[in-house]
Image 1: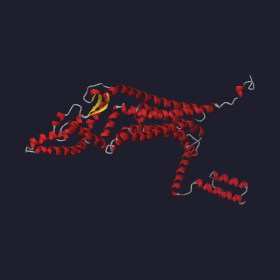
Image 2: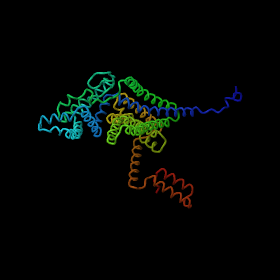
Image 3: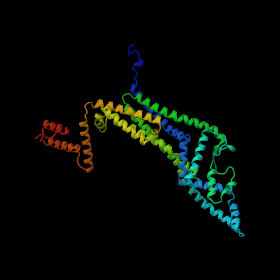
Image 4: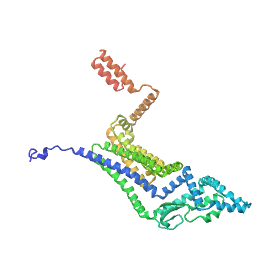
Length: 454
């Protein structure tokens, strides 16, 4: 059957390359959105489900001045709410001072003692031992919380329908710091200084959330990487541009995570800060509690910058071509290429600019991807500059440094000098001092940087 007999053969069809381009861009867009969601999933997983991270965050919280002040106020309020401090002081005054009417001093003393107690407890919580008590309480509570214990223990319990963090040890140190000994501690009710984490009726929902976070933290990251890789694979003929688009997608996701953190922080702080005096503590709590989110989003930004830079280095711009020409003789030699690669890897492992370099499996994956990039750059430079030598590379580097030095001093660069000579040559041709042949010869000499013949 001929084309004339087949009506479908005459219909215009989009080139396969264009269809692949559209599909690859769609995949990159979807992968970028998944990366944004993965940032929050990874943060929640690392912050909420990792006991070491949880404990470290709790330690940073108690070390913050504004938060420590609020904790001190809470402990003193608990003490005055659950114990008749005035009555305790009346007994002390009657036993020690004895004169009639001495007990009337207990009221003013209790009020003045409250202010002093808040300052004293704040100072107390700034010391290593109470901070260690706080850290241990949070560590034990988090470990048991992960196992979702339904009751028992001295720190975590579900008695009364609530899951609580018990700070009675800190409260005991608080009452001791007030100078009334164990008399107050004996009268503390069982539920004093307990912070409700959530209701026991919410344990089932908490279990579902934990399972979801563990799944999303892995699935979203793996799916996003797979879509990025598939998009680059489909981008035959424009893979460098596709790689750059992937880098831009990571930049979008990282920036989106940081912007969302800032916007959510304003809303959360406004909701928590019932008074202006509490706002500094709420802001500090949000900043410290989401520090891992900032770390993950910043790492995503760094990966995006590295990928965009790699795409630029493989591109056609004059700077990129010059860089590849200068690196060509060194990349051609495996001892230099892979020796430099090993040095870079050691620096990255020691520096750990992103959290992934502190974990074995992610670090191995990143090092593998970096090795693939180095090999791709080696092959590209060997194809483009098969005859590049060290002397030529060093000479070009010296000229580049010399040009930078002249620019810093405000002097003319070789490019500026050639431009001036070409303009002068054009004026001489226009005035008739040079014919076409002489003009062409002089122009070729200037562009080739050859010295003028004597």
